[in-house]
Image (cartoon, rainbow, N blue to C red):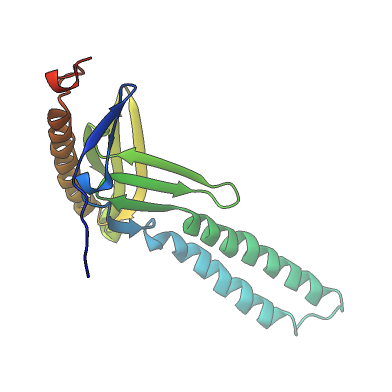
Length: 195
């Protein structure tokens, strides 16, 4: 049984440097998370109240049309007070990999945003008193030039901040090493790639 391994090479065609997949370690998922679950407390209370109230009142009303009105009102509360907030909560997620942050938002219309670890200038945590009690907070990625991305209400925001800082340092070092190995420093091509 013979196995062959390819060597790590980079080829330059028309000013674009391409690298084989063996040049870097494969991208790995570090964490997947959703906003803190405390956002589902009020919808859960509304669900219990709507179902309990409908079950209590539906058999005690004198007119035949009244139980249908109670059931319709309970159905509206369940749909708009429970199902919609849960769908919105499920539609938001953050995936942190070894190379980027992927933010998913939306239900029917999905929005995906990717931020490479080389982009953020600073990672800041904002926490309200309620978020402190729940152990959550907002992680703000400052991208420079008054641009920012806010990862709303994540659990363990300080741990997320520390992990992102470590990943950003590692990615910046890898990026600088790749630029040095290709001969590009400060946007100039090295002697190995002179035309």
